[in-house]
Image (tube, rainbow, N blue to C red; front, side):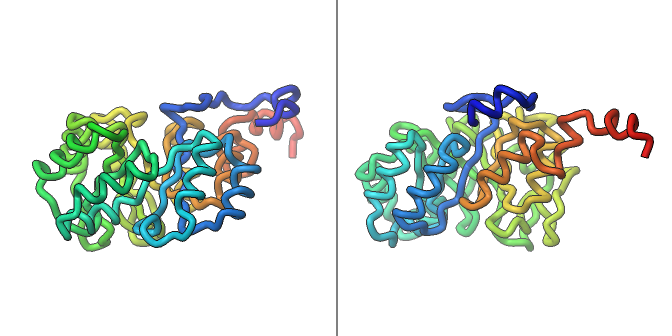
Amino acid sequence: MSTLLKEFLSLPPRSKKPRESGVTLALDKGLGLREVEDLLASSSDYIDIVKLGWGTGYVTQNLRDKVALYHLAGIPVYLGGTLLELCILQNRFDEYRQFAQSLGLRHCEVSTGIIELSEKDKTYYIRELTKDFRVLSEVGSKSATKVLPAYKWIECIQAELDAGAWKVICEGRESGTVGIFHTNGEVKSGVVDEIVTRIDPNRLIFEAPQKAQQVWFIQKFGSDVNLGNIASFDVIALETLRLGLRGDTMPDFHDVKTWNGRQGL
């Protein structure tokens, strides 16, 4: 954040990088090198980790140069969970691990958004990968027809944390219409409420690609909620929501009600 803003505005507190809470997980869907440079020039202070979405890391040209740009800015990068799912499906787990290591990656994602794995098998992969990486696991399906009850979310999340996951991502997909969301994008508030009665929200990353979803989580958990699947062009917009610098959250962090009351309008 600029020194100028710190000098004359009172803003809600934000944790400093490297963060354990208030994480912004940005989604890179295939940015070019110049686009990455522009993103980092304007937003690097607000990005905590970057996911190379789906299998884009497998087909991106100049991948090593891209990863190097993020690393130079102090931002870790990891390959989307879909790529690992395909590697497991094709019995290429060792090759996946070698590929990630060859790129200098220190994070990885274990998901079951497409393929099905028993909890025993999924936690096996988590434990294996914690030997070399900081693991993010993901709970929830990418299919709108596969609905998990709250107790199952809790069981899966806890098992994956116990297996060594750094944080567990609650599936929302890039569309924000599956997992912890209804097909219309509305948050499954009852499910979220039940999850956080048993799981510390600081151990979770809520995928929230839509602005209304970001607002909901910030209003519920505060500025330092962990949010993922944030489009690269939305990183700064999200930071303004976190700080009450946007109309959607300004009344949550600043005393708009008292001011308006004094105006008598």
